[in-house]
Length: 394
Image 1: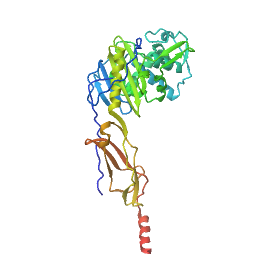
Image 2: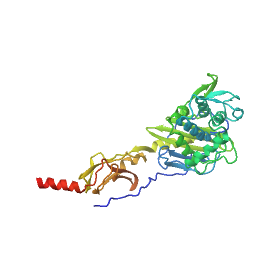
Image 3: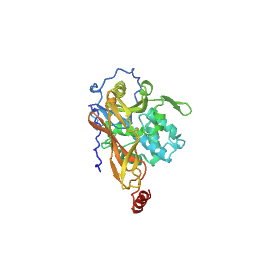
């Protein structure tokens, strides 16, 4: 029997550059210009901000970095994690959009971006989600934190626990809204990680893509602090921020033709720069990269079975892999199908009997297991005796 060939998986190394990814304070609401022509691969110069990163949302592949691991104050981008916890509670059924939340004294006294909650004022979770995502309301964030965990402090503990679970190695939260405090720090890379996590909840997109809305029976108007929602095609969110220590910031997400990118910009000097640099990164991603589903084997596959009650078993390839590729290299991907010459019985359904290897420029970018579609039991004494009888009896 020919020994089954094993290959070591290698991750596709896409271009990695030097550049990166709003806030506890009041949000800047200036408009942005029209989309400019975008650079091709390798054509982005240093961005006009302290730190930045561009990733593809589903794979986490990093396409551009600038001081991506530098500790920074995140301002209201903090609320991305606040929203993750809220989404978890909604998904588990512990929280409903129709639930009523009562503002505490603390919530009503929050400064910075706010909807001016009054002490004991009641709003639904749905209304507070709009306040947090559209106008970055600190008071709404604290009200939700207290409603879920009993206190902001307990909620922040949960935020930090979730950060560790997500692999956000350089993040420490001190509050749930992003006001400047000692030790309240993260990085552009960690922000991209939690932004991708938040985008897994389809519900959040219903809020982060709101351009204008209102609260209190139309008496209080809401206009999204993220101007890209209106001015950039495919925008799905996500969160702006600005404080004295953080500067002007954004984590911006957009999706086109099934591919979603996240651009994090930290420490820009103006709102215009924040949005333009985010657009530059997103447009770079869309111009040069695409999520691509690779072909799997379509012809019938089978493998010989030795000492089994059947001479062979059918085989099938697993789910087609989806990888992020440079657009001009998609046609250069090669595929190699490897199936064992034979396997010994017994064979279990789902047992690996081969694999498909995908390569680009000589590097393995993905592989898919080929497995047995049915089981084949090992032939015993009576099986061989019956076979012998059939031969003798002719």
